[in-house]
Length: 402
Image 1 (tube, rainbow, N blue to C red):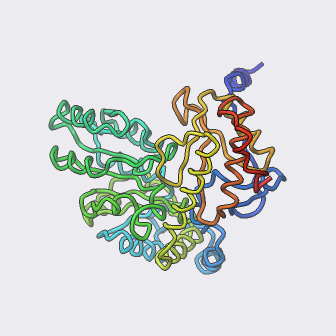
Image 2: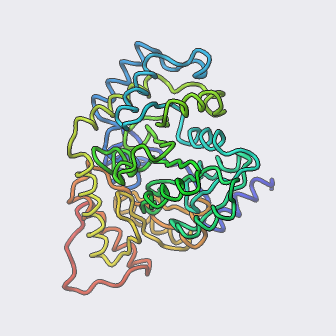
């Protein structure tokens, strides 16, 4: 038995083994998963734009006009007119001076943090920030102060302790595993008071939160008060890649210092064109955010009716905390048997003892689909001993998505 085989067996024993599931066809509210039709409740394609006809057509047209790939890094020969067009449109959308495209959200966070927090300085990171932020902090060589989740008092204490070494506060705006929103107003005030920069990752907020889907920073009225806003093209905008919106000087600094931009091939033209088309669709749709949040409210209420706790979520991301990793995956498989795909999330993605089903709604789900999915999840949770038994008069009939 090889050491890798033994490690894999250890993962199986702890309920942490992972495998790839195969989706046939485009990402919609319903998919074919490993040959089985299911309702999809764990995609980040929040607005359903990944398979929108205009987005697909834009990607196909760009492939014919610009080619399948950029062929080089941004600073060599990889920056094409289509990249500049999307950067300008993103800057306009976010009411920012400039935007810089990156290959992915992971690369964007690594590039931003590594450029703004240096050895000998201190970067301040929420304990539930995404792995890309955590790794960006590690690679920056700065000391990282991890403050308790959304705890402004703990952060303020850390800033006082760091003094002049304090360099950067970085946070997700919508936390990807529990759907909670960061206290952005308080973070901005602390950044001003201690003369440090503030970077906010809006990956799960753009298209989903705030006026016109511009994100939680805009919803908090903090335009111009956040030094760097990071966003992704691969979630609500239905494509792939990422961007940073910021001031002109900051944009030029990132182009000259962000290693993940300097040493990576530029985003592929079809992905850039798809994102540009998706952004136009979002800007033309006055009710996209409203539909998404209405669906989130429907699912939250239906889960509550089933006796399931949705924690602190107030957004389109709704966690069902289970605790044990293997029980979580058992619950995932039970729901899948009844036609609902809600992926189990386990350590190291979440802390030990907090494994969960991470539910995400799409604006293209119907209310009937979401209520039916809640019934299926409720039944699975009761069968697993994770939810209170239903009284006879509480029976709502057969699920809508059997």
